[in-house]
Amino acid sequence: MKTRKFLSTAFLALTIFATTFTFAQKEKTVMVGGAAMYPSKNIIENAVNSKDHTTLVAAVKAAGLVETLQGKGPFTVFAPTNAAFDKLPKGTVETLLKPENKKMLQTILTYHVLAGKMNASDIAVAIKKGGGKATLKTVSGGTLTAWMKGSAVYLTDENGKSAKVTIADVNQSNGIIHVIDAVVTPKA
Image 1 (cartoon, rainbow, N blue to C red):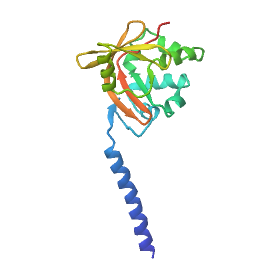
Image 2: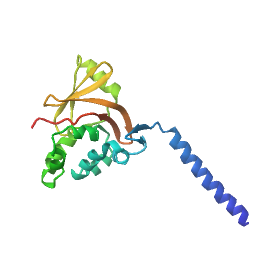
Image 3: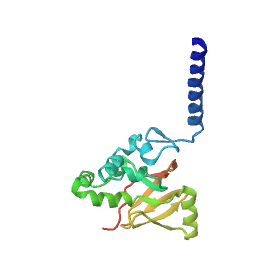
Image 4: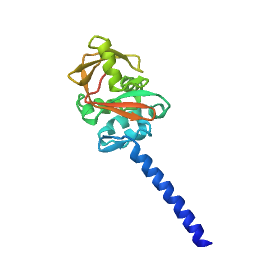
């Protein structure tokens, strides 16, 4: 009787492991910042694992946007890397992370977010329809202009600064992330 119960428990454990392993293998992950990004996880669950996005994650936490980006969405997030934040004038990030600048930080971060899910081909179609440029409305209420140079997608902010999409189509359970090489900012 004990042997049968043990075998039954062992079989159940093995079945659960095999099912989980098979599911994980079937998920099409993208590597970002040395970590696999799983389509079954939300934006925050994935972003916290990217060593290239520690500044962005710290900023999202300081801005109080974690719950929002864990929400149902869908969202399209243009995610600047740590190197992108490093391009900002010295002291900018530290200043933005101060509690008294929370509203400004929220505006800048939500300027990197679109309501809805736009993958790279959706953006390319919008650019083609727009005769070479597409105006994207951000959650902060501002606009980004998307355009292409060769096969690369770029975004130009309201101040004329551009960022290149370096990794496109990182699917999430609540949207999509496109990694960018610069921080874009709304008109002040």
